[in-house]
Length: 90
Image (cartoon, rainbow, N blue to C red; front, top):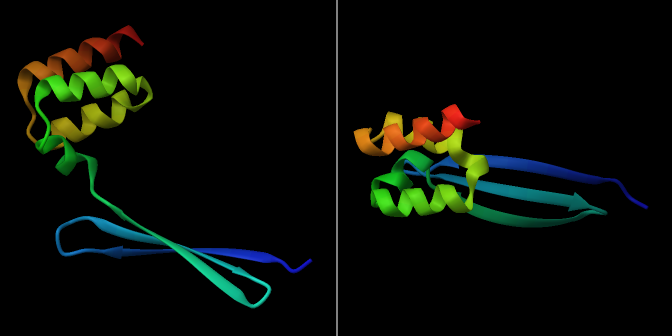
């Protein structure tokens, strides 16, 4: 059995997103999976407060990340207060 090597290549894109390529080398063959990733702070800017709340209720494990991204982005006071309440309950 030949060894498998994984390589991660990250390329910044002009719109602030990142392109991540996962390249698998095995037995002289290569396969790649490429993903375009938009920073969370930019994703939240396109969402209403109600959409962000619904997202958090479905994905509570991302609460800290969403709070930090909202705080660094639009910093909507009512949303930040709601997120902070949830953080305080943890």
